[in-house]
Length: 486
View 1 (cartoon, rainbow, N blue to C red):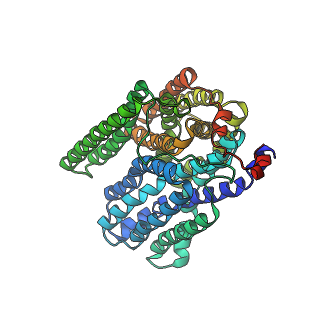
View 2 (spheres, rainbow, N blue to C red):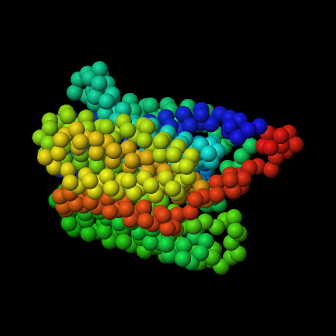
């Protein structure tokens, strides 16, 4: 049987997982279309609404790390199902909420559903051969992320159809019902691997194990921005006077203590592990993980940050109306449908390292050009440049994840979790730069970040030996199966 026949049923799994991620993102951003309505009906201030928007992203950062550990231990089918079921509860609570604190707490927990991205990455990597893996993961991420745009387009219409002042509540609650129903559909129809493959589980839900002392130090350093990103979120709240400074200091201290305690546990666990004779097939490069994480920080993190600031930027720079500026910003969501799969496909076809380095270089040039945007530019040229940044940035994101599943198979979820978390951290950090400086500095920072990642990738990233990675997951065949695997 040829390679494609060995993976029979993979298109169905890709569709099931993409829809699961699509539903997750739709639930994640189901508040956005109703911000003004919620503020008016519940007498919420603009600053309070800003807090709701920030906490909606907060737990996605540690959540992606946690989901990565769970999916490597228990498999994507069970974890994706459980996540959709459990997170439908805060969705219903938010829809029924009548006080600000009910909305705040439910939104905080609901942000965890953004970690669903990691689960599907492991599932798709199990169901596609190396020659198609990048393209398949690009489809999963690109089309799944479209759930946010779908929510923005359809939920207001549904609210009008339901009618009355509670129309928005029914629309948001409906997304929770969809998540609950689809969880059952996913559980009944998805499988962790094709029948001929063994799902390589991690031995525990503990963190990543380093396979050398230098990798352990690098792992500890790479873990710091995860806590730092949460600290930047707290700083954003405190700097806008939404969060009292005394409370912010308490959170800073708690994050610092949590980092020290977790790094102590990591050092102790890995110190004992490094004393053992580590098999060659268990070793992997933490350097690969770190560079891919920072590359995603620059690509997807920049994308999220630019989407957030673009409407206001175009309104103020070119004196556009809100509708026109919003249409330009929404182009990022639509280009994702094509650009991210294209980045994965190009990586499959022409080499993962080559495409990542090339796309990062082009991206750095484009964002540096964005820093020169002014009212003297023709609006068409500004839109073309913006669209080019969108296309290349999302293609680069697809290229990053075309490599993730080949670093260490039984740790793919955790590695994807760390890399994915860096995307959220990047958006927080770039938006913090925007708050401190002018948009010109914001675009320059992204351009410099992409260039530095390009240099690091060209020197330190290794093209993965995908054939070796795939052979390690094949079951020892029975006589009946042997002809299939051969």
